[in-house]
Length: 448
Image 1 (cartoon, rainbow, N blue to C red):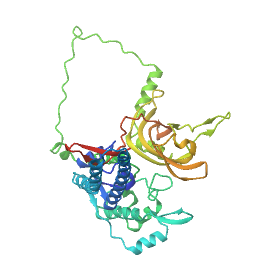
Image 2: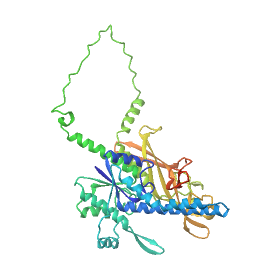
Image 3: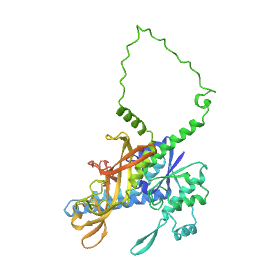
Image 4: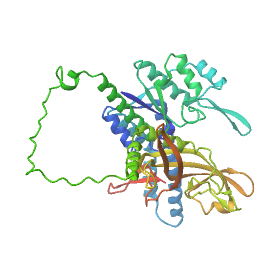
């Protein structure tokens, strides 16, 4: 069984794997195809995030209720219900994780017992997942919890069979290499030191890619089983039963149906048919890998308007979505939420078009006068000067990738990010806690 270890940043939007494509991973675990593993460190991080989010929502709701009180409305019962709901949020979150871990194919692993001196040596040696960043003109070390998550992965590997693989789901900069396609060399050296082959750890940069890799693992396992199976394994006996083919009597000329003349194909039709046949010769997992690489390669790309030929200002060619931060914005984070699906291009049979959905994080400068226009979709994180603010925003986008199918494999021809139609209730509303009225009806307070 393939263990799928979840990092905090892979599920921070969906801790209980209930939205988008995440339930498919839960179904795969329930079927025995894989095992979802929550490091206890991850559960505690997610719990803190949910509690802090609930506190912020409670503060906003309490402020709104207090404003109603200033208008002369009796708010005593509402305030009491609101406070009671807030007081039980931590227990509700704990119960949600207990229910999650009770499902078939899902479990947690304890916090690893790591020597303090080993942590100190790793930190001082600037070895990932530890990172040093500049904060208030001073260097600050980060990554303590990430080290414990990585140690959880190593303990899983050491406790499993020598040929077993672990799938690690993360897009945290502390774990991945600069190419964003593999684990950082410091982590690979950890494997070497423990005598663990590097290929025993595979990286998935999100839940959708993890699903694809689990399905690939299933396919490979089935192929290996079939290749090593004997006739007795396949047919339940020493050799498959021989069945003599039944050859029908040749009809007499008088009873034979007149055959319609076969229409010969034109050279163009023959070429198109061959290209279609070749298009689907590339494994689905290779298509997913190529499309996913193209998506995550957009991290740190500028999405602001740029001076183009002729003196006009245009967005980069891949930007087909509404950019809420107009000046100097770059993509600082990507969280793919839906799997890639592929279909043949209408333009060419040897080109496939892959589509998915993702949430991208943008950071950049926002003119003060534009802030109120984008209020609600943009978060202010600091002040640059009297005229500009540091801002960040999260945007849901549709990902469209064109992939050329060649004899050597899949070749990405282009990628664009488009706007996703917004439903009346966003799929990213986060239930925080419930309030029951006098009749016992429950309504969820949410954060959009």
